[in-house]
Image (tube, rainbow, N blue to C red; front, side, top):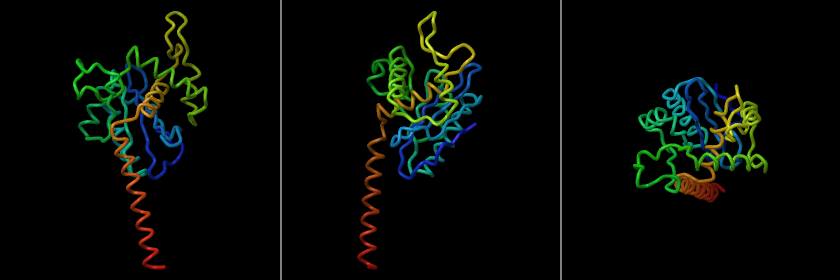
Length: 216
């Protein structure tokens, strides 16, 4: 099921964090606006990892139509290899690649950087940054499914590890956290997108001046 919370604006940059299904868990993704830092759209379903790739490709095209920009898509790589493979096969633009600071350049090939890699280092940072954003109320979440998962995301009393409480899920929590990380880190094509946006504004300004000179 896909939930749309508001219509995105023309020129708005969107990032999508995706957490594919693992075992009997849900597949989930969250679309976050760079401009407003709010959840624009979200999804939670039982679709398998490869099918999620097709769904994300479809959503990417929808955002391109609505905003004139393809969203940046960051898929959790540890459980999302099939999702990433489908997205690459379909030539989906703007797939997030883990920055050099998060990977060991001597061990990771260029093509293996696609997706968000959850490690003993990146997981605590993701959760800490998300927790801070929630405390500071700098992120807007109009989805009760996400807030429900946040309320049941607790620290395991035995292991001390932050995770979903027994019988609960955390797919949307991690999808949201990944999207927020991408906003904070930035992505490869962000500068290109910004330049295109500036060029578009300059073009319309020139066009508007030309029309006024011609007709008025």
